[in-house]
Length: 310
Image 1: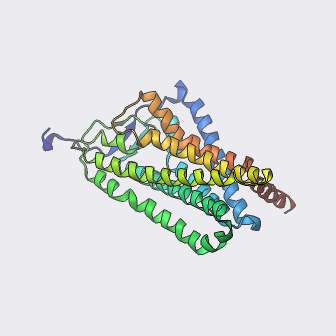
Image 2: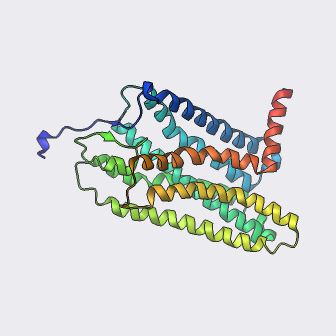
Image 3: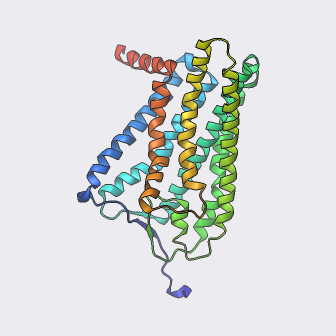
């Protein structure tokens, strides 16, 4: 196509959302309820950890940071989905799309790094308990969390900058629920084969986190099985099972989304996987951490009781 005949795309259209009168209202109400639960549930976990001195330790600090990230992560995409379900135009500007991709993946990468830190924390706590307080210091926790945020937000920057330089001359229909790397790159009027190198980098970073977490929990399980007391084993398994469940939910959906390279699924399956990754995994986080953790449940009850007394 001649450059002078190209029309520069300044906005994208989400073409796969149902119209308001054709079921959009039902999906809107359902998604709004899920989003409110994610925000309220994760906010309760975050506030409970901050307000209850019994939870002022590395494990709960990491959980509170993860809950904060879940709120940010879902806020990047779900409000826009809600808007698309009730709006006629269902469009997003080119800059808005780039920003959505950047923050969505930056918060996602940061979550993956925090989950890795949480696994290492549990490994030290269970496999080397006598040195735990010496190794996992408050200063180290701050450095690890700060480093996760910095790395998470730097890692995606080169890719987003590169995408911003690509020519988009039409069509401009995104066949996904939000702006994501592959659906947007398919619309570029240029050679995007370089994205394969980016896929390899993403795969290596994801598999590195998965390997560290898996090896940590395998070692933890072997140590727990040697505990002489059944009560000690049950308490340790209860704590770790919540972390493992979140790990499987998060990285399971990540693997389906970003570790398949050229493999494609049916459009409806693509959207189900996207919902698992962007909506359902954050939805289960407050359920798992509040229902399976006695200290967290007590802290949340205490928080509500103190509010009533006031």
